[in-house]
Amino acid sequence: DVKVTQSSRYLVKRTGEKVFLECVQDMDHENMFWYRQDPGLGLRLIYFSYDVKMKEKGDIPEGYSVSREKKERFSLILESASTNQTSMYLCASSLNGWRGAPSDEQFFGPGTRLTVL
Amino acid sequence: KNEVEQSPQNLTAQEGEFITINCSYSVGISALHWLQQHPGGGIVSLFMLSSGKKKHGRLIATINIQEKHSSLHITASHPRDSAVYICAVPLIQGAQKLVFGQGTRLTINP
Image (cartoon, rainbow over all chains, first blue to last red; front, side, top):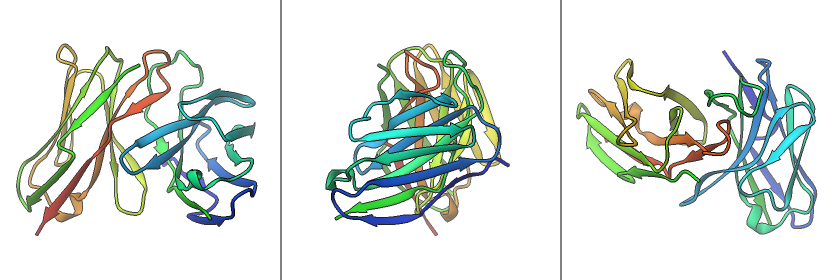
């Protein structure tokens, strides 16, 4: 079974702090995704990576950056956390590795509930 | 950009009832995803389908490509089916990126 793990289930940070959210998948998937989920807004894509060191902006990249130095690991970075970044953050991965590949099943991590005070 | 609408937003039913959740989208797609999210946050992929019907246990998903519509059915519903059900379709510009519906919150009472 594919396993996607996230570094923390719950995280509390202060405004202005630099925050790292880590995601690791163990099935050699090419694609990895970071989403945030807010009540009434559903799941929204922050960033997407289809290969090591490759990334694409999603719908809401402002205030976030990402890093993919190794295939299995995709990190989401909040350079200076703000209260409007309080949210549930979900990481996902899927197999197909090129941007034009057909839509593929995504496997999700358990989520990190981040609170910024 | 593909828009996704789900209905109903909330659904409460008694154990044993037949459940239907609907999903409509605005532009042509290669595949549609149904996901399940239990309280606590974890999301599980239930189905990915591009035509016809798929069945897994008591869950059945159907899609009508011409109508741009999909349904998720649950037969003999059980309280453990209580969850949020989400449909998602690819963005027109890139098939790897998904657009998600708002979700349907299903509660099955014993």
